[in-house]
Image (cartoon, rainbow, N blue to C red; front, side):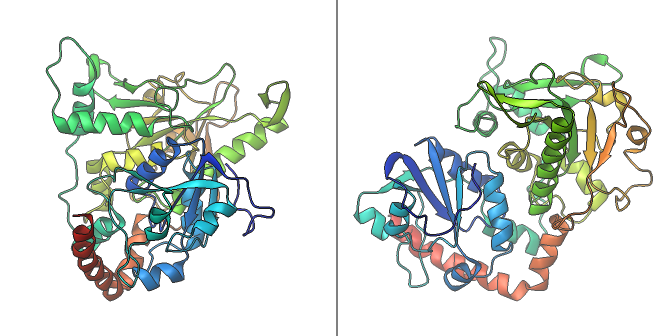
Length: 426
């Protein structure tokens, strides 16, 4: 994955069928956006992601919740992105496709219109350079804003309901035919756990933690999706959280975890090997635990989490900085729990941001802060404050509430446009 390059690229990049363009607002790093990016990547080998400016989005759709810089960070963090391009035009311009060497542009099977009510992809459609993928149902930035403004909780999932569905859909001669919902959820989890090329089965591993499984006092992690396991000598580190509205704060934290481990590995003389050449410090194997809806709501109250466990899991899985996912991880990550991790037991490090603000009577990381890893080093490591430390679900809700009238107008405009866009599809 490359950092954004100066626009326009000079010289222009040669056009190839395998280079695909996708563009959008990408406001919130929700799994609907990630699903479109994944499907686009699977149509080629190199994916360029154009991101519209705050100003163009405001003119054509309404105010953004996340800034352009935050939205670029989210697109960069998606493992299927090869090159993010800021300030891409709202009406897709074939000149931009030519400059970045992309033969085709990809979009969902819905219609997106500009401020004049015209199809944003009308030009590339007319040139035969437009490919359609399935839109992810039931999720959009508009849907999420609606949950925040209306304070609804109907999206919350009962404890272990997601895992029950996923396990019921796994192939087995002794299991009945799974429900359509269970089959869909498992298909999504498998797809989002795919590798950076969108290949299923060679990406992230997915497990579900059950504190009561098999009568074990410490519980057990049950495998949902097989994928890459830690390599010989690769450091395993653990992070956890709600990851609600998977924001720039979460993304920057995970990025800093990986960068910290790579820097430390280089100082120890441990390098990634690409062929016969060393290429920087060895990357860690990052296991991410995601708390269930009831656990988050117990501490944050109101209608948190805004995204349910299924939605949050997919957001974390699409992120290039994680290697494995644990569903329904406990709020207190005890040494006993860490010992059940199927990635080698207690990891070499557990990372978190500053914990002084956490809404609980006792520090959930206290045991880990007093523990050592197998090398005699402190087990718990803290990522310091950073540019987006304060950007979490609460901050995003606050942004919307403070400009409620603007976002309510955006919702009204979206509903009015949706009627016309549906008619255009028909």
